[in-house]
Length: 197
Ligand SMILES: [Fe+2]
Ligand SMILES: [Fe+2]
Image (cartoon, rainbow, N blue to C red; front, side, top):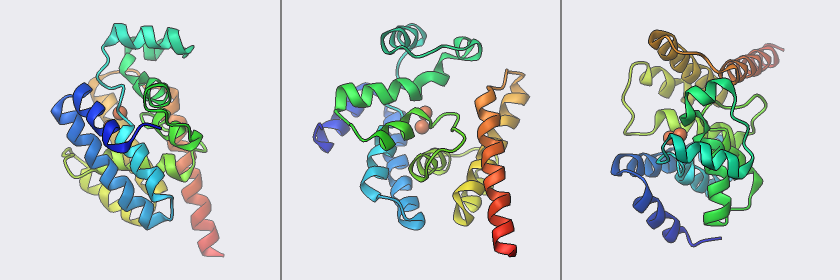
């Protein structure tokens, strides 16, 4: 694997200053969540740092990368290619940075829409992406508070906010967004039932 400071240098060169700062903040939030929820801190830090490594690509570059890596472009992603930056990012992280850990690569791949059944590491990066320090949008306080309660609560709160935003803009919702929310809600309900027993 590439040295960590080399990875950071590479990200600073390719990402906009704002996106680079966001990456560092997601790393910090991922570390904090990993400590809170009992996950490998180093893996969380690396996944958080690298999660947006393909965010700088424009539409043509995204579609070219999909061809190269055999990523299926569905109807909605074709309209909103940025939805694919996580999946491409996982390949970039592997090819360019030499990251091999499948859990880290999954966390990068699934950070945009989440995925039903995603593991704790993926959930941490998914939530950290919403709540990192420099983020400021409606409902951020609700999501930050939810993240203090459980990852599942934060995933639902984050996706509620995303879905409301997409509806307001009149855009198509990706079915994976809905599937992830339903999964996290089910997890929450199961946790409540177990607590009640
Ligand atoms: Fe992203
Ligand atoms: Fe991000």
